[in-house]
Image 1 (tube, one colour):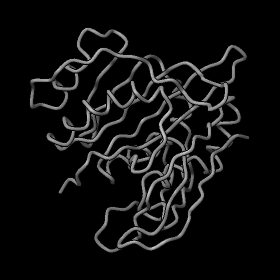
Image 2: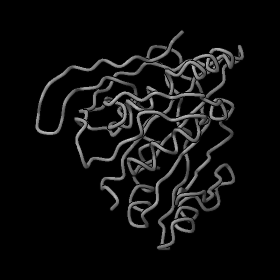
Image 3: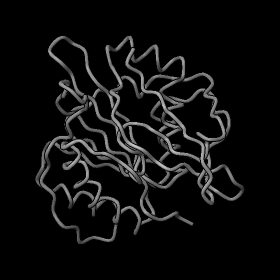
Length: 235
């Protein structure tokens, strides 16, 4: 089916309990990036300090082309970025993309800035999960939590129905050991959509969820979901 799987190598290093292999590197501690990530990294490098300074979190949804030879991925589209002058989150992010008709920036609930580049397929985001069970390691680690969302029965069925694949890309990330005082998701979430679950990941771990889709001529496509932290935990 092409669903990604995580491999955890259990080690002990302070509050770090493992090494998680997944695509796109989560918080990018130990990641191997495809060339197309240069566009993505440029956007995130501009966006992260704005959100960190204004105490917002974010979501970046984008559509790109499918790269299916060798390493599969959704190519992040090029955008023209501008310096931001405002200290207001929504205005500052809109300044980043000013003049680019392919980019829409809005503000949602719970201090979330949404950036939409192109026309990503959002059908998967609307899929409702009746009961999402989150294991302790997933509850304390955003990229593992995303794996849990993708592994939900309803989500697997939707991915298959929509003709999507989740491409496997090599990267590695140190995992946080579940510990009192660390941010974490609840063990169970009920009656949530994929989009709502991903918003919970962004809000809980103070970062940006990225969601990219692409379509192939045969009607099939790829979907990539990732997380990147803001570099500091919001108090």
